[in-house]
Amino acid sequence: MKVEKTKLPGVLKITPDVFEDQRGLFFESFRADRYEAHGIPGAFAQDSVSRSRHGVLRGLHFQWPGAQGKLVYVLEGEVFDVAVDVRPDAPTFRQWAGHRLSAENRTQIWIPPGFAHGFEVLSSEALFAYKCTTPYDAKCEQAILWDDPDLAIAWPIRAPMLSSKDVAAPRLRDLDVKRLPR
Image (tube, rainbow, N blue to C red; front, side, top):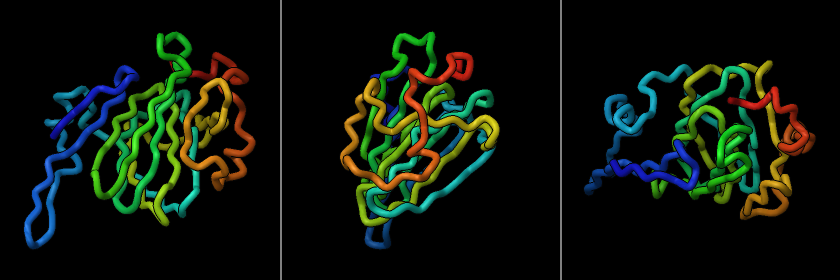
C-alpha cells in the first residue's frame, strides 16, 4: 500500500495494492499491522456505511468529547471528501484538505481525532464506509456549517442536498472554544 501525507498533519491518503485479473480484483481494505506502522490504530470501535444520492453533502461533523478517528473510503461511486482541523491550539486550525475518493481509485483517507469530516457525492449514488476509533455518541456530535466562509472549502457542487441539522450548523468561529478538541 502507498501512504501519503496531506497538507494537514496526521491526515493520510492511502492507496491499497490492488490485484486484478480476468476474474475481477482483490485488495486489503484494512490490515491492522500495516496501518499501525503508519500511526493508524489497529482497533476500531465501530464500522458504518451510508448510501447517498448525487449532490448530497454530509458534514461537517465531529465529536467532542469522545473524538473519533475515521478511516473512510468509497465502495460504490465517487465523493469529494474533506477533513477540517478543528483543534484551536493546532497550527493548522481552520485549514482543510479535500480528496476525490471513488470505488475506482480505492483511495482511503485517515482522519485522526480532532478533525471535522464531510463529503459530497459526485456520482449518481455513493456507498461510503467509515471505520471509527470510538462509537458514535449523539450527545457529543457537533457540526460546522458546510460553506463556512472562514474555511472557504472548494466544494464541487455549490447547491448540495443537506440535512436540516447541517443547514442549521454554526460557523466554526461561533462554536464555544471549550467545545472543540484539544
